[in-house]
Amino acid sequence: KQEVTQIPAALSVPEGENLVLNCSFTDSAIYNLQWFRQDPGKGLTSLLLIQSSQREQTSGRLNASLDKSSGRSTLYIAASQPGDSATYLCAVIWDSGAGSYQLTFGKGTKLSVIP
Amino acid sequence: DARVTQTPRHKVTEMGQEVTMRCQPILGHNTVFWYRQTMMQGLELLAYFRNRAPLDDSGMPKDRFSAEMPDATLATLKIQPSEPRDSAVYFCASGLVTGQPRDEQFFGPGTRLTVL
Image (cartoon, each protein chain N blue to C red):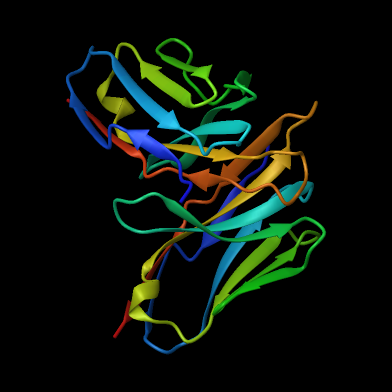
């Protein structure tokens, strides 16, 4: 069974700082890993998708890395802004057997960027 | 622009009542997922369909929950009878799943369910 853990559960940083969010998973046999953002009362917005064969993906100020062997992914946010305040979730897509496609989420990191 | 839509956005009901949540996936997507989000459990996968056929509903309590796709443009999640512990936000997501690592999911805005 795949388990996904995100540390820390909450993070508060001053505006302008660079920060790293962590995601770890227990089974390295994954298809891909996806980072999402969730604003209060809203649905999830996909930020970055890293395929199992990739090491990292970049979009603007966001950079996500993947180390399958160690079961870790990080989301790096450069020059943080108050608008980045949200909960960030990582999700791992994996094969639970016989081609059954499973997705397991972490519980998220709640980020607050202080102006 | 293409997006996943869900109705209703909010639902308050009394224990024992039937609740039906609806989802319209993005046109052309072949897979629809249902998730439940609670503070205690985070996001959990309840069920998903590929080409309208149920592939996996192991995350769903079978005694009261049912999920269907009557056609390619509509997925439903029904709870009968509802209980206070069902209170959560229910998300629908859709994707074009090819079995490749590039597959991606797109989420709807969710239905916030409160069972009194």
